[in-house]
Every structure is written in C-alpha cells, then in structure tokens.
Length: 97
Picture 1 (cartoon, helix red, strand yellow):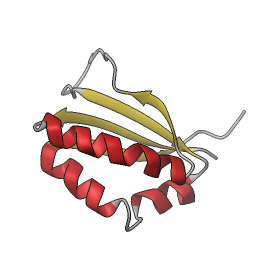
Picture 2 (cartoon, helix red, strand yellow):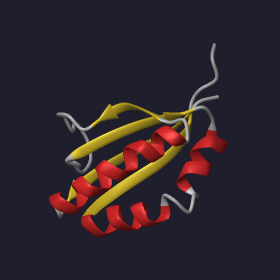
Picture 3 (cartoon, helix red, strand yellow):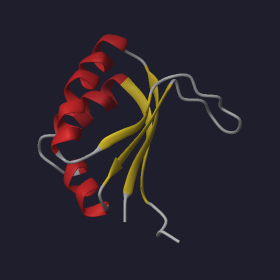
Picture 4 (cartoon, rainbow, N blue to C red):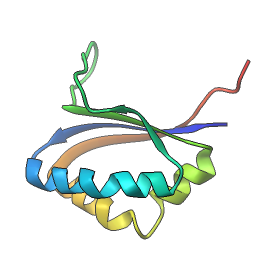
C-alpha cells in the first residue's frame, strides 16, 4: 500500500531552502519516491497557510521510513528545519477498493 509524505513549509531563508531542494530530489528518487505535488500555487481554505506544499509518494511505509530515517536525509532534514517552519505528515494510503 502506497505511503505519502505530506509537507507544508513556510520559508525563512530562500537561499538555504533552495539548497535543500537541490539536494533532496535525487535522494527521494534513490528511495523510490516521486513527487505528486511540488510547490506551485495552493489555496488554503482552512488552517494556517504554508508557502510550499509537497506530496511525495513511496511504494509503502517501510520505503518511506527508510528515506525519512536514513543517515543521508538527516543533514537535509536539519537544513530544512533551520531555514523553514514545516509541518510534515507520514500517511499510509487507503487500500484499493
């Protein structure tokens, strides 16, 4: 069952966030993830707005956790946390009907 990383981000330091984006894409690819939503305009209809929205699909939760918990992602997570205010959710998809 697919699993999803869902993030909303308010960018405090665009230069550093750009460096994060440049580095994280190849790592996501390496762990079999693919962007379903990556930036672009979003309409907030409820709750606090984020400037950037991303939804990344992985084959399953173990694949997503392998990415999230990897030593290769740890410094990038630290970089993102240092230059943004983020909300990140890891969620399993619904089973096929």
